[in-house]
Image 1 (spheres, rainbow, N blue to C red):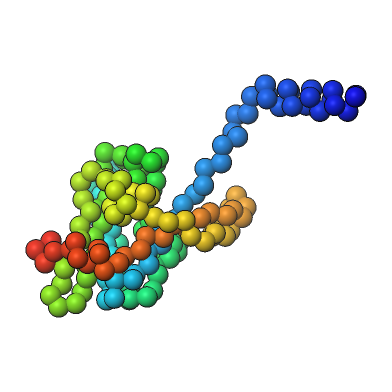
Image 2 (cartoon, helix red, strand yellow):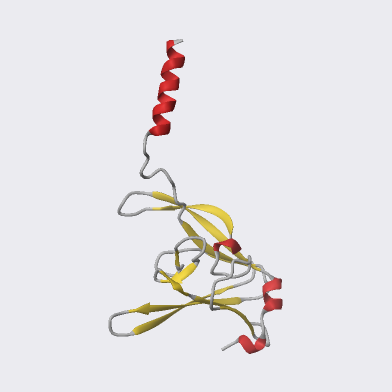
Length: 169
């Protein structure tokens, strides 16, 4: 009977104790799987603001059919994510989403552009709603090792069907 009282007391204390950091935020890193049946160039265009100027950085990579572009430090820009309603944004500014482009390189080239307000429609590359949970990523860092998750955006023939010749810059 005493054990039961102790267990009940522990449960009551645990429920009324204030936990200041009880929520775990899963850190997400995007990956891009190309299943479109042709080589695709993926581009992220990011605006950075300095006290003196606006700097526009282009990050681009080619992904052959059947390959996946994984998150790697220093090679591919992966944007920032600030909540479900914000998506991928330029250096933390929710009012300025990055522009992302898919260039399908067969002749004639066709492009699919994601620009303007982020759409949470399962297609817009800038929304986590368009990604599927993938593998764990083990990162070593100054604050110790941590485990993040890779989220995969799959480029399909349907994306190519949505692309247009006149969208290519």
